[in-house]
Length: 125
Image (cartoon, rainbow, N blue to C red; front, side, top):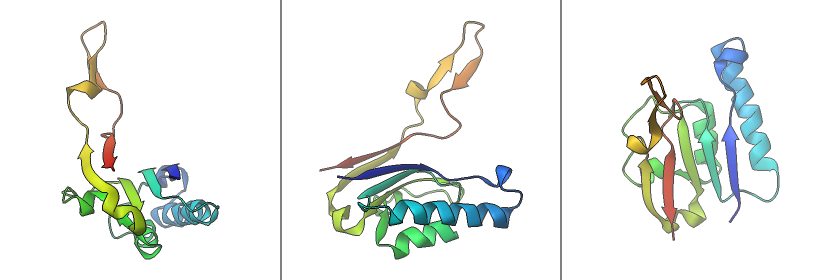
């Protein structure tokens, strides 16, 4: 199984929302064009559902694992696990892991989290 981990650019470094979207599209197309074709594409795509990168993944024959699992509850999400439609039947579980295992307290008693994004987990058979 081929897995591609991505972190597409945010608008912060692109200069504008439209430049950010264009940069994400270029990088995503590059990932999809590089053989072998990934079975899974996962990571911070810095784009909401319905955006150009989201549509590219759908049109390229990938399934949003959160949607397939019935777990897509936020239109503000920017992290995804995409599974090639030919492998989608292997999806048996999906979760955003935002529980206590990802929260810490430093020596001064200040709470912090390992990331500002909840890690995503998929189970494939």
